[in-house]
Image 1 (tube, rainbow, N blue to C red):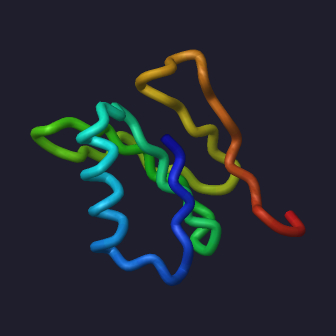
Image 2: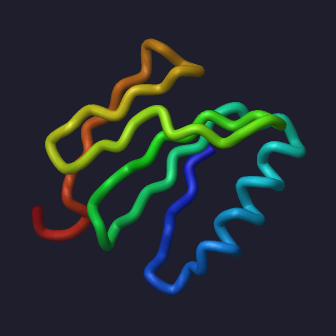
Length: 79
């Protein structure tokens, strides 16, 4: 699952979405902050939400669920 975090998103709103994803069996979520230019990769389970990695511009985001997947982080606009 990829979730775009907008500047107006409240922490509680994101936590509710993550809880929904856990309930439907999503094992991994990428939280993408356009404003901060970062991607946080989270492992989801009923026991916990664990951050597996934090990636910035120039890094390659890697998935634990899809080990062959690696995507570059780039600037959203003008970069």
